[in-house]
Image (cartoon, rainbow, N blue to C red):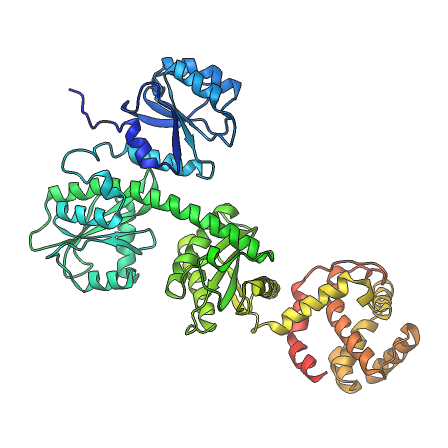
Length: 566
């Protein structure tokens, strides 16, 4: 006898995907046909039994592609249930007509939905064919995670919590008379499981288990727990607290079945979240580029905001685009205790987060947030990050400035990798100012002194040390004895070099303005010349220098003191 619940119907699949994810363009055999599974369509493959009842994903194929239209008759004979593809605005008329003749349904997948999410949704649906069976929560319960938690609690006979992979509470049951202990109360109130070593061991055991596990040492009341997955992808977990009656095998089975329904809901929730995040990311990208949208579109009130920039490592086992999204998710999760309406966007190797700050939240809390993100990134993503924090600004028009400052901080931290991994612009403002001056001097020939470039070229070509000598002289405020000692040369030798500098390069050390500009340019160029080991550019040409750690280290040692004194 055929089991009515052996496979979900095409109508059920459409309901699970939702109208925002897929539209039905044709269904010549109706929507009650069973769907046995899904696979990627390869039109060069010979059709066979694997296609019977399957939804075939036409990844990368246009609706009017001749190869697709030619393959439909054979796919119809093989018993394929449907073709799913992204139309991307193309004419679907010929495809719908050919599919009707072949007896195959056509689903138009939303262009913005990644195929991996479609694959996960269909995998979850195929793994839970009994979800509409009598006595199991209906699709209405799937649409409300709290309602689902209550339905599962009634079936299992214990209080339920549903968590995401970061152990944040997404929903919980609230039926009368449910048992409660301190662990459940604290978890619900904080919306986060306290992750000490004991709980981490339990979660590691749960992630490895193929089904329901019993936990008797997490709290006074025993628990059942099951991981929620779509295929091999972890989506979260469901926990049940035991009441006065011990859980039996039927409770374990009910919880295992509930995991399938929760998987469908969490996938739909993730899809909606991703669409919202993508929209907010595009708004943030425009804002960082100097095109501020309205505060209403961001969903936040105008007020104090700051930009947090997190630099991804250049080499990682995870592709940078995927790693960027993972870090963005981590920032959003960690920022929930600090602020609401956090927006993130990935630009190349950097994840930018716009953090609205309530009036009672000090700017220093952003550094604590960055430290938390970096720590959790090392633990969960095995990735070392650097974080730069811009100034707090009061208007959307000033957000690009906060982003530029965060970028400057990252540049300073990259040049000084052993200094720290988190800093704000106020922590490194002197170094950031010098980096900006460096770029100005390098990119604008009008800002380059001919005497300095000539001096550096002379040293490179003839092996002299005039630039180094003059820099030591200016660093020592003209104290010849101190400067000579720093270079380990005799004072007479040092005085001779200073005299020759004036003769060869027309340097006037009696002019205070000239001394200041000479000191700045020598500070920015001497270390670079040593590192590059080549003649400097002509004064009339522009050449962007390489930002070397040695040069920044030279700047760091005395920049702040010198700029205040000068």
